[in-house]
Amino acid sequence: SDGCLFEYADISENYLTGTVPAEVASLKHVDLYENRFTGIDRLVCESQPADQLKYGCDGILCKPGFFNEKEGRQTSDSSKCEPCPTGDIDHPYFGATDCDSQDLPFGGPAPTPPADDFNENEVVREALET
Image (cartoon, rainbow, N blue to C red; front, side):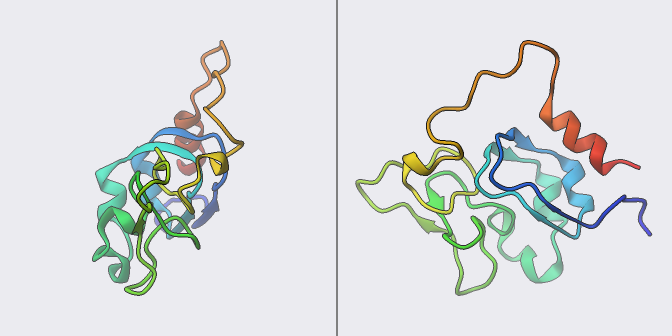
């Protein structure tokens, strides 16, 4: 074993924000679509299974302004990240499954984070560390 507590995680459709942390690279499969990620650590993109590497970061999450209605990422040559149609409001986050701003996770802008020192990226990191 490589020391990871688990190999699969589905943390899609949450309020997670910021950059997808490098620690996600230790997972064999992770679903991250429909969050509020504004970046992806390069290590995550470079650590994909060999059959997904050719898609670059799109194999993790479609970039802002693009979507994949099935998983919010490119999963094959025929299941690509497509640009949002002209006239639609571009989805501002990575991992969109459509371009309708009303379908952003939990609708509308992200809530104000709690006043304490809660850091969701730290929670993800701690969950992935042994």
